[in-house]
Amino acid sequence: MKGVRSLSGLFAVYKPAGVHWKRVRDTVETKLLKALNSSERPVQEYQIRFLPNSAQGTNDAETNLTVAQVPVLANHPRVRGPKFVHLKVGVGHHLDYRSSGVFVLAVGSGNKQLSYLHNCHLTKEYTVKGSFGTATDDFSDTGRLIEKTTYDHITQDRLDRIIAVIQGSHQKALITYSGIDLKSQEAYELACRGMLRPLHKSPPIITGIRCIELALPNFILEIQCVHETQQYLRKIIHEIGLELKSSAVCTSVRRTREGVFSLDDTLIKTEWNLQNISTAVQHSQLRVEAALLEEHWRRTAFSGESMSTGDQARGLGRYPVATTAAS
Image (cartoon, rainbow, N blue to C red; front, side, top):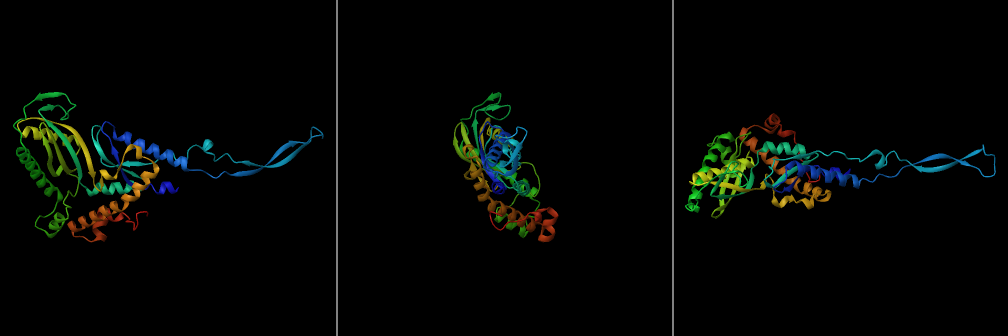
């Protein structure tokens, strides 16, 4: 049971492109179940039985009883089957089939933590690659080709101007959905701490975007956002191409951060085992709790209500904050 207790929490794995997120989750669950069942070695129990034993040289009808110690097979794994047959593995924000990167999973009490983190509306970060000169029906390089265009007129300066316009429009949306008064002290404190984000569910919002590489026809964007889908990011690439009097398709979407988890925290497929996952859960516990406490402060600062009333109204006060990573 010690192995099960050490699995209660959150961890991140690296989801490769071309694999469905359900397959990733099922693979992790299968490996954990196999490891837990193999680590369970029940103590062999014995019982006293009186076994018949025919005595030599006596009447054939006479039978003697011999006291013997025989194993109890009722609890043997081959009789009762595996002890662990199901392990609830929750998933964070999905990554579609063509995307890769940070994919957060939860086990045990981590499923409750995961729901709280969803309500925190933490930002996610992506590295998105695009290519000018073509347009497809699904905005990706694998879609059906619609048109080809020229792109020699595109420069870094023109691309940066379009990106600035996109960020400016989304910044206004962020302020609107954050539900705060920009002239208040609370708004100033939230902005200084980088905690300005939607209070509730909202349309996709880009909180930051910049071009980190341009080598025509290819370019790479770094995007921070909330409530997005990977298809929405591909559409952003398409719209950038149109604004530059050209066309563009998305060639890659890679999530590099989801909330408190970054690429450095992810486990690749060869590391999906009980020991590595237990270690990852323990290492992430304090960061997860810190994010929940920070969200608690943010909502309290926004509402101006006390912990006893504001948090109870929103359900945040129900989360028990542990004092150690192992608790």
